[in-house]
Structures are given as C-alpha cells and as structure tokens.
Length: 394
Image (cartoon, rainbow, N blue to C red; front, side):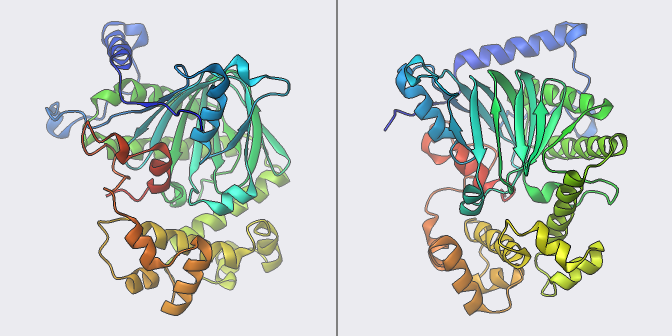
C-alpha cells in the first residue's frame, strides 16, 4: 500500500494566506468585491477562527507511488487514470486542500493531466449525491454525461450532479470546487432550473467567481457566525447564475432531459417523508407522463427504486448522527416508511447491515462539524467522511 500523506495546516500555508490577506488590505486593485459578511451590530467579532484545512499532497512521496496515493485519496468521488503512455515513475505531483463550512465543502486542487470517471456502479455503491460546482483557475476539462460534453475553462462555472454517472479528462489544472448537499439547492425558485453537467457564464457567473475568491482569501479568518451567511449567499448567486444562463441559451433535448430529471429529484427531496409520494403524484405535479418518468430514471433502477434509495440514505444519515436520539422506528416513519419490517429489510439489502448496526457502528466523534474537535485530533476526520456527512452536520 502507498504511504498516504495527510498533513495538518503548515506554517507555509499560513504564510501564503497571510500574504494574500495583506495584499487584499493594501492593494486597491486586488480588493475583493465581496467583503466578509457584516457582524451583528456592525462590529467585528473577537471570536477565534474555527476553520482548519484538511491538506493532502503527493510532493513528499516517491514518484512511482504518487499517482496511486492520489487515486486512493479521490476514490470516494471518482476513479482516475493517467493519460495513455504516461509512466507512473515520472511522478504525479498534486495538492488538495479542503475546508468544511458545515453546509458546504470548499476544495482547492492542483493536479497534472489525468482522466476521471464516476461510474453507475460507484453512484449506486456510495452515499454521496451532492452537487459539484467547479471553477478552473488554469487548464481545461472535458466532461461527458449521457453523450453530452461540457467543456470547462477559466471564466466558467460548471455544475455537476454526483448522483449521476460522468466521465472526462483534464489537462494540468488548478481548480476551485464546491460540494453542496442536494437539499441546499432543492428548494430553488420555480423559475430556476438547476441543470446537470452545465457550464454557467455571464455576469452572475463572474460575480460568483469573485465571491468565491473572496471566501478563499478569508477562510482562515471566518468565525462560526459567518458560515451560514456564506453558504446562503453562494446558493443565491448560483440560483441567479442558473436562471440567467437558462434565459440566454436555447435548450437542447439532452439538457431538457437533465433539467426534467433534476425537477423530479428536487420534488422527491422536498416530499421524501410524505406517505403519498407516488409516481402518480409526481406526474400530476410536474405535468409529465408515466412513460417519460420511467425513461429518465431507467439508469437509476426505476423511479420507485430511486425514491426508496433516497429515503434509505436519509435514514442512514440520521442513524449515523450521534446527536440524533430518535428511535429507529421513528426515523423510519420520518423518511416515509410505513412498516418497520419493510424498512429493516430494505435497509439491510441496501447497505449490508441492519439499522441497529448502523447506529452502533458510530463510535467516534461526529465528523460532519466544520472543524476538528481539537488541534491534536488528527484521525477524527477525513475528506471522505466530510463528503459523506455533508449536509447533516449539527
């Protein structure tokens, strides 16, 4: 097995961030358009910063082991491959810095050229069904979903669902990514269509990029009361950018299918606990035929399977949260199951262990909070755990 190196925050990183912050203060040309959210009463809080980065780098590994280490680190998201004829012994120098804001993950990544795939098998096997928002600082990407290729380049913002298979390739690139829980965008205004595998452009996209730059520059300085404001502002700008892009571009049949699928996903998410969430209700509320609904969810094993899986994932998240003291039966009812026996059978079939075992498996501190329990608590969190618990933090 390769020696995976995960570092805590280093003085070098702090120096870079401090220098960046100093430039922002002293240079009018570099001043960000969006300052930190104002404090209550207009006064700066004296509370210390709570955000600590999760750092991963292959720099100090032997060149022949670097790519294997990178593959393992990003495996919860995608399977990666080197370009054809690229020997592993030449090395793969990559960096990955993640910040957990509780309701959103921010990742800065630098990596050489590679290809990536999130297969249907991976989508079905894990619990990660978030939105991935990607901004390229340098380089280019090409990502294919159901035969449609979205090209990423600096100045664009790409939205992609981790609940749907995709594959692509990247040149040497520096990327800023957001991971947002599906529920965060599920209550978008009726006029906003959040489309999978789409690239946003225009004024609101530029504003979003500027705001994200501002967030990154201030990450070491944020206090707890800043985080909800940051997450909600990001959501609002994404909504505005999605609405503007939809109005400016003619929709293709492919994008219409993806947009319709996202409308169904949002409707299911909002009505997950309803006992009358049926195919008939979805068709009636969204104005579509049963045939069309079955067609777009064929890859997910059918719409019934999709609804049940979303309910099971919601129940799993509740059972995995030590702060949730509900009885298992109450959790089952809360996510839309009407029979304890049916819930137990379905849960065991989906995850390979019972609901009671899922609750008993959680023996370490909760991993979804936006900061580690202490400076020395190195083993209490990981990027994979942050992904799995995103959107379910206390």
